[in-house]
View 1 (cartoon, helix red, strand yellow):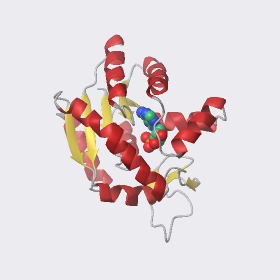
View 2 (tube, protein in one colour):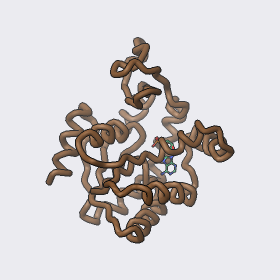
View 3 (cartoon, protein in one colour):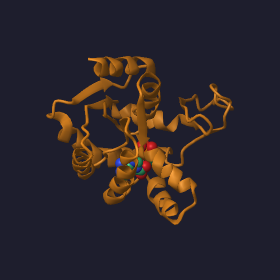
Length: 210
Ligand code: AMP
């Protein structure tokens, strides 16, 4: 099973990936996490990436494809692709890469969320530094620490209203065409992302167990 988890920023790709990992023997590749790890390393490349990412823009395709191929080659488990492909060029490169590596995408799952929910959700989310949990919080009364593990909570620098709005626009322009790319290939399915995470997961599980 090699799954592409698609959806706009804030659709719940990270949350659903965490649930999938508990239920299936898969490797999760979040290109956003890979990029944030490079930024945290303090490398020159990380600094350049930080400027792009914190503005809510996309990292150039060639660099993304190169980074991704190294990780895909190093895993023989089924993969959840989270946040990749984000452009049609990346989708074409992924097809070519999978063919070269004699693997195939089995499911393309789009978590669908109405635009009006997106910015609201992004601006009220916090992530745990320790366990990585993504939480939707009441901003007037946010939890002091992660309810699951007690870890420190933080807000991503690209989760401000302005940057979230910009990321949504980038999504509309660059990533929505990826939906058309996959839509007629027989592997594309949509799930309603405007439900409780547990229900979204049930819907995804049904698709994978078919
Ligand atoms: P995410 O954690 O998936 O929301 O990604 C955070 C940011 O990382 C995005 O807003 C982009 O700046 C960058 N990014 C993540 N994945 C990609 C990708 N496949 N192509 C280009 N930029 C990406």
